[in-house]
Amino acid sequence: MIIYNVTVNIEKDLEQDWLQWMREQHIPDVMGTGLFQKSRLFKVMVEEEQGITYSIQYEVRDRETLQLYQEVYAPKLQAEFRARYGDRAVSFRTLLQLESEHQ
Image 1 (tube, rainbow, N blue to C red):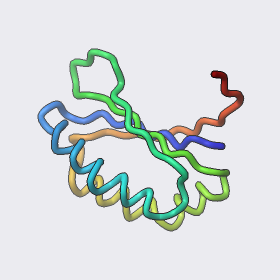
Image 2 (cartoon, rainbow, N blue to C red; image 1 turned 60 degrees about the horizontal axis):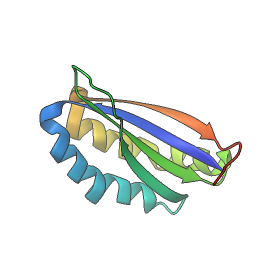
Image 3 (cartoon, one colour; image 1 turned 90 degrees about the horizontal axis):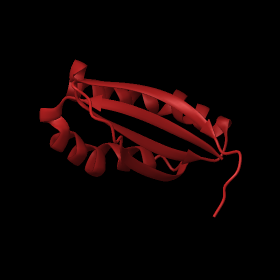
Image 4 (cartoon, helix red, strand yellow; image 1 turned 30 degrees about the vertical axis):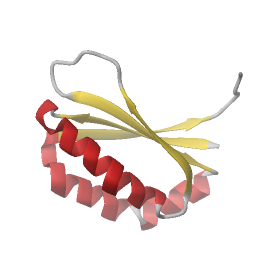
């Protein structure tokens, strides 16, 4: 399993609009591709002078499935994000591979 992690720093005055848009539009659009098994939205618990940071984690079966998402769906979805928030939100992406899990 791979986690496609998107970390976003959003200006404080946009936080509630961004959260609503993410929950009602963007995350459902990503999940609607049928390529991800699960998603989670986390608030990063750190005090920052500039903006508020969130992490959105999408669980995907393998790199091939993620590559399909990045080639077919991501350009449009990322363009919608940029059109809505411009430079008032900064994001970066990382891949996490599950090595072990403990209960």
